[in-house]
Length: 98
Image (cartoon, rainbow, N blue to C red):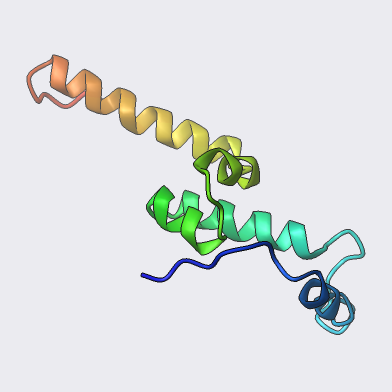
């Protein structure tokens, strides 16, 4: 897989800015909010973090983590899934929820 290198072209981001009202976007929506949403949706949808990192052209995973603004609901579901798995393992595979 070829990885994009370098930063996003500011000129391309400016091109998008001219179309925000045509698309019905609120004034507060900019290129970076769309980028954050894209990364967040990929993470919440279960895409591999390395894939997400390569999609947005980040050299370091820590940079990508800045863009993730996962919802509290997603955090709760993820925590619940992992805790249920640990409990099931500890109980020898028994169901932990009714």
